[in-house]
Image 1 (cartoon, rainbow, N blue to C red):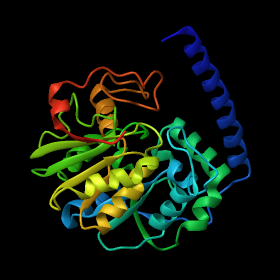
Image 2 (image 1 turned 90 degrees about the vertical axis):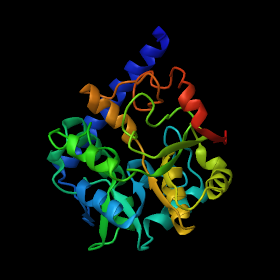
Image 3 (image 1 turned 30 degrees about the horizontal axis):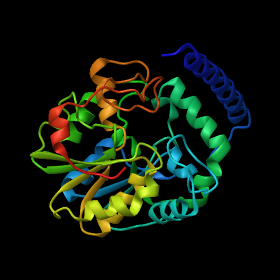
Image 4 (image 1 turned 180 degrees about the horizontal axis):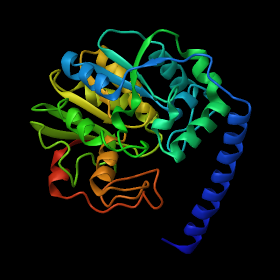
Length: 303
C-alpha cells in the first residue's frame, strides 16, 4: 500500500472515530430511542423459515435505509429516485414467502461489540427517523444478520452453529451467484461445497443498480428450480424481491462469505481477503486471480 493511501486511511479513521464518539455521547446523554421497535426474528428463526418454506430474502441495513432518500449515497452505490422508490416498495411489502429482514439492533444492543454498538447509536442518532417512518409496530420482520453472523457479535459461541444452519439453505441445490465482479463467493473456502452445482453472473463492483434491467434479464433466463444467491448491496435487496415475484427463490446473501472467512481465521477486525473484494477493509479492493474453477463457473458478465 502506498504511503499516500495509508495517510488517507489514517485521516479517515481519525475523523470517523471523532464523529462516532460525538454522536454516541449525545445519543446516550439525550437518551435517544426509536419510536417504532420492530419485532425481529432471531438468526436461527430466519434460517428455519427459509429452509422450511423456501422463502426469499431482502435485507435492510444502514445502507439500504439511507438510500430510501434519493439524495443520499453510500460508498459503492449512488442514490437516485428509482432506487429509492424500489427500496421503499420492498421494505413496505408483505408477501407470503418473501422475508423483509432488518438489522436486529433495536433492543439489547450489548449483544454486539463496542465498535458495532457505537456505529448503530450514531446511525440511529442521525437517521433513526427513516426507520420510524417506514416500519410497522407489531409486524414480524426477519434478521439481516443472518448474513453477518460473526464479526459484530460480542460473543462468538453461536457462530459455528449459525454457519452450519446456513448451509442447509443450499444443500444439494443448483445455485447461481449474482455477485459483484470481485466478490467471488465461496472461492477459497468450503462454505458452498454441499451445493449440487455453482454458476455465476458477474455484475459491477459499484453502482450495480445502473445495470439493473440487464442483471434482472440475465437472471430471468435461468430455470425456475435454481437458487439465486445475490451479493450486490442495495441492488440485491430489490433484485431478490423481483425474482421472488417472478417465481424464483432468491436470497440477498450479502457479506456471508466474507464473514465466514473472518470466522475461519478468527479475525478480530475486518481485514482484507486475498481472493475477494472487501469494501470495509483497508486495501480490500485489491484481489488476486480467482482461478480456473471460478472462471469456468461464470455464465454471464454484465459490467
